[in-house]
Length: 235
Image 1: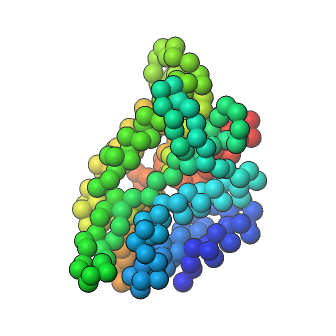
Image 2: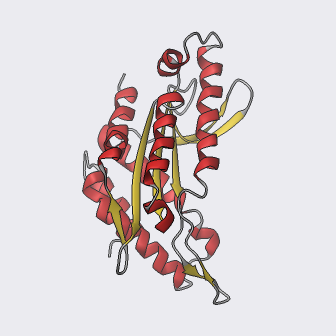
Image 3: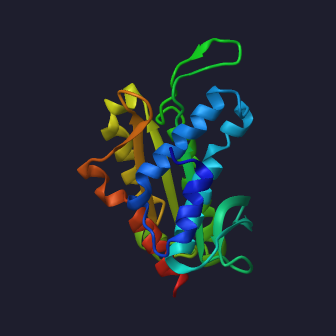
């Protein structure tokens, strides 16, 4: 089973590697992390930071594709200070901002032996969506100006470019209602972000996870967003 360190090393060692090539490695790394948690080898606080691992994977995919290492930054918006997962360049006015979000937790046993039910990605989706709707608008208003005109044209032309990438665990409820989640991501892409990448996964019938692919996700491919990010960096 691939663990997280092995996955990161694989990406670092392979120039131009694509997420599609490492989907299975990613799912194995997530299962390994869950196994460590269930065995008490890491505490819940560490496990709850698994979203940082998804962020780190995106950073490595970008580095593999265009040889640039992205870092987090604190950026002044028009009205608020924003702490973002990744930004380019590392100093001065940003031209690119990226947020990485991981949603959902499988069923598991707590330290007291009580079983905690799964928490599908849809539970926290609306809260996380609000974060990546407000942040790009506040940043674009700061660095491009407040003369908006037509909303859609302004959004796509304003700087910094803003992308969000999502890894979502689907529980039984979400598997039966993927259309509602995809529609929310579509509206996010159309009205708030310059691009949105989404990867769905679920529990397999046995141990581990399986990817959930469907035609409706073809416009939200993680690799397409990484390509767009590298295009912005290369300008």
